[in-house]
Image (cartoon, rainbow, N blue to C red; front, side, top):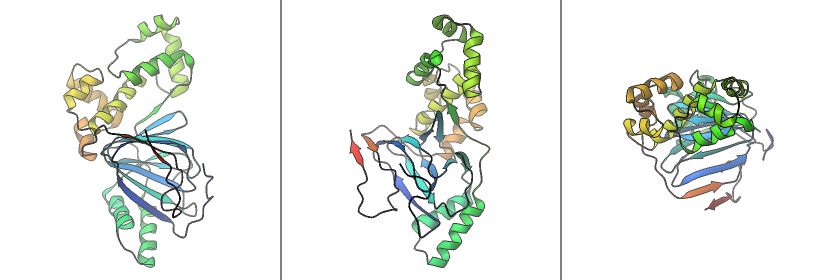
Length: 279
């Protein structure tokens, strides 16, 4: 774990581009830098506190320096990360979605892959900082901490096709439907039905990133009608499943699992163990 600015850098920004060979999990860690994270192919998940952010579909995630977070991405995902020194202007003081415009993508390509002179690099860094903007689109799910609704959370995580109604859950839990709804609203800002739909769409994004057909994805997350699934998906994600897939085109499938425990970017130090454990 690193505090913001704990490691000094000679540049304002640096990055990497990685094709993940294994299903990968990053344990809770923090960086001394601000981080811009996105998946060019496939999808990923980042957890900050009780919030689960889906990183896919042309939307990235800004994570401020020193912020504890964890994450995962399936094998076949192409992940891009740009780290910004704390000397650079911060986009936000809390995690926020970032719109990955074509211009931003080109500038990051230049920063990551090009052999730049010091002057060109500084210009590229300034342009990235100038064009990066928060996105109005985000796919984030707040996980309620209340033990009362934990069975609902666990069920949807393990079986997103579950269609148990609010009334049935209330009977199982021995409370009123109003109590369940108020618990979700107090802890997530969403009522029961909207939270369930958002959780299903979050799972659908992962399946779309694995190149599963839209009709099959709809069935896997509990929709008998493809049109109803498309409507729900668009309401939550701001795009249809087809449009979302087009922005995260590629195939990401299951593979061997890797856990990464190092919170320091590879570029920070040379010769430091990367902390990778293959399970």
